[in-house]
Structure formats: structure tokens, C-alpha cells
Length: 514
Image (cartoon, rainbow, N blue to C red):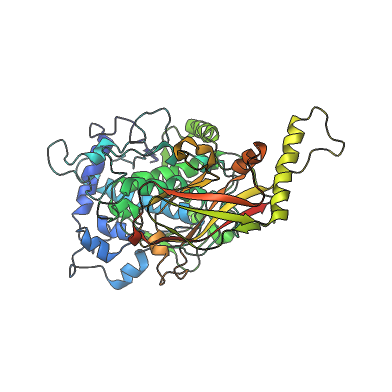
């Protein structure tokens, strides 16, 4: 049987939809299982990540309770893949695993044998409610007034009720990325991320992981008034929230959409197809056995053992791609591919580490004047060619360089911040009125863990790369581009406390030939 995953909003997003009612009943059954049961809710959440102190604080772990054998913890737990080209395929196997466990509990209770995990398409421009947390997750009770297992108290959002995601946080520019794998070293990170080994906590996110994935996590989880992060805001607690799985089903669906573009190709590198070599991916199955898998086995969702498809997947692919193109990135020419082998070149950087506290921070990136002039001349030549009525004797000029903004070694003591990054924002202007200058948004999801010195990268934090070609091109065309420096504003959605410990070690500008 091929199971069909349907939109959470297909029948109103509430418990009148049998899919959501039975999801609640299946989750409830899994939540009753002990921590030591690898087919239980808490065990599966720990596969993504576990911080026992946070779990204890929120009431999900009691010191002294029965735990799985240490060998099982070492095999399964703290396995989620982030800041890596394995991010997408690892999560596909992970969602498939919980889907089977929930379905099994539903069948035991007399529910539908064809139940499949719904997805939350918060980017659906045809649905005015798409960005709102579905009602089934906001209600504290089920229709019979019993406690709702889909509701969690530690889901703070942006401080409003109901939780509604900002429109700019769920745009789909990532689908316009031509390459799955990024090149790194100052260049773009690709649709799926950079080539790595096993990466539970890495440095640079792929475009899909950055936006909308990370930002939606934080928009939903948020933080309490005392600064404690919501479950969805931290990778070590995110899997405890039932909305997590619908969010990741949607991220998985977007991979399917991206793949349907005939110009897009998943990696063929054996290191990706058969990797990682340093630690194998593994999830529990319904019968209690362990399923080890590789990205190669995740490529076709309709094949065994996955056996699922998304509703209207074929017809929706073109629609989603058109929506992505219309919402073209303020900052980027995402559809332009970099020529193979061309490295990014540093054009300039700011002078010192930035500490982000309160309403924001500013810095100036000083540019190498010769390289800055070359960038500007490239845009000027392209503009002259586009507006000329007489073709030049030597043909079209070469494409202008792609301009890339790097925020390097972002560290934090807490997750849950959302920070917008602007280029040359005029003093006194409302940032929301100048989205044309928005380079990108950083959702602080996993930054805390990446900042810990005992992590694989030694506490170097994460880095983000934004394509600001379009911004720089428009600044040059309007006469507002300085070849000496670019000004960068970091503007958090809410005031950042001192104890958040947010710093950015360096902000730099790179260029790369196209």
C-alpha cells in the first residue's frame, strides 16, 4: 500500500478531521510508554536530541526512572542531522519511523489502517489560515473534554494567540536553488547543505534548512516570559512537540517538489548516497527491529519501505515553484548557478565581534576598494547592455559577480531568537517598509548547542550565507552603492537579553563569478 499524506488544513485543521483525531489518539498511546521503550514518544524525541536538564525542567524526564540500556542510547539518541547535506534524507527516515509507530497504535484502537502523517503547508497562498497553528494543536482538550495530547504548554510562538507565522518567514526561495550541495568557503550552501560527515550539530545550513525550517521552529516554539525556550525552539526538545512532525513532513514534501524540477538533481556522490561512514542512521520500526538506512534508500518515497506520497504532489509542484519565483528573494538571484570550480573571493569584512543585545546591532563592512569597484562595474556593464539598442561589437558582457553576505561563527547561550539582517537600511526607516533591503533571517535553532565547546566543531557556533546580489545591484543602479563599505543591521524580532549571549564573530562580503 502507498499511503497518502494530506494537508493538515484539508478538512479545517481541527478534530472534525479524522486524520487529526486519530493522530491525537496515536500520540496519546505513544506518550504513555516508558522512556525505555524505543517505540515510545519520548524515546523517539530523544532520537532527534535530548538534554536531560531541559527535559526534567519541563516534566518529560524524572531522574531515576527506567532508561534504555546505554548501548541503545548510544545507537539511537542525539542523531538528528543539522548543518549538513544529510539534513533532508535523515529527517525523511525519521518521520517515516514515527508515522509507522503512530499508525500501529491507531490500528490497535480500531482506527484507519491507511492513516498517514499530515503535513503543515504554511506557505499555501491560497489558504488565508495556512500560517496559523492548526486548531487541533491549540485546543487544550479533545472533543470529549479529555486532555489533548497534541497540545503542549511550552509552545510560546511570538507571544500572540493564536500562533501565526509571519508571511516573510515561510517564503520558498530555497526551491529556486539550482544545486543540492553548496560549495562553502564563503559561497552559497545549496538547497540541501554542505558536504560533511555525520553532523548532529554543524556550522552552515542549507537554504531549505535555514528558511523556512529553522525560522518556523523558532516562530512556533518561541520563548517564555522568563526566557525559557519553547520545545520547538531547541533541537534537544523539538521532537516532544506533536507539531514537529507535521513541520518536518512539509519540509520533506518540499524536497519532493524541488526534485520534480527537471533542472534539479540530488547528489550522486557515493559519500552522500551511502553515507555517512562514521555513524549509520537508524530508527526503530513497528516490530521493534532496527532499520539502518542511507540517503540512497530515501530517494523514492513511493518505494518500499517508505511507501508514501503527498496529495496533489504532481500538480502542486509547478504551483509551488511559481509561488517561489513570485516571492523572489529580496536578496538574491537564486536561480543562477555557479560555474563549477569557481571559488568565492573575500571582498571585505567588519572590524570586530558583534554582541547582539536589546533592539539590535549595526556594523560596517569595509570593502577592498579595487574589488568593490570591480563589482560595481560588473553591474553597470550588465545594465548598459540590457538597455542598449545597439549590440556591442564584442558581445554581451560576462555576468556580474554574485555577492554573498557571510555571518560567521554566530554563538548564543539560548535558542529562540529570530534576527532579520538588512543591508544599507537608511537611518530612521521602518525595516518592515524596506524588505527590498532584507538580506535574510536567522532562526536561532540549534545555535546554543553548536556554541558548546564539547561539540564536534569546538563551540564555533553556526554561520549563515545570504545572497545579496539583487540588493547590491539595485543599490548600484540607484547610485546608492558605496564601493568603500556596506552597512549591516541585525534587528531581532524582540529585544535580546544580555544572558542570551548572542555574538557574531565576523561579518564579511564575498564575490563569486557566475
